[in-house]
Length: 199
Image: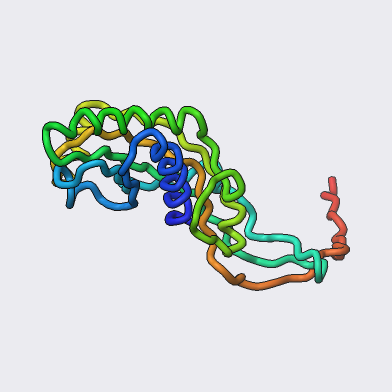
């Protein structure tokens, strides 16, 4: 679901920016390879992901409505994605345009911060049942100067106007199940007499 989540964000941002700025492209990719070489380009790249710990304790047993029993399946992993959105520019004359694109990006996700397949216009076709249930929230994530320096140092590219967003919560679930069991209808046991200590 990582690709599907980022593609929804890309599609939404492209839909928002295109009418405001002609000739703009919004792509998925790493800014490290192209920083300072392409004009009028917004790049969306994944820089980190983490597991959402608060949703980790779910049961592996799921009721099967067909058999009345239970299916055993490892619970899904819920992820938070940290996404770097960069407004790339080629020369000094394009820097002003890059700043305007960055401003439009912030406006886009301020206007709409909850995404599903149903509420986002996209030309991609998602036929996976899990993708159709994708629900996520996008929130601005502020980095300190030190962390920002470390991020761009790790990317190894020239720093360009950019913003980091935290995308919560993307669900990952593998196909198949580990096993199945029947429903427990009664509990039987042997009651043992409790010995009484003699005086």
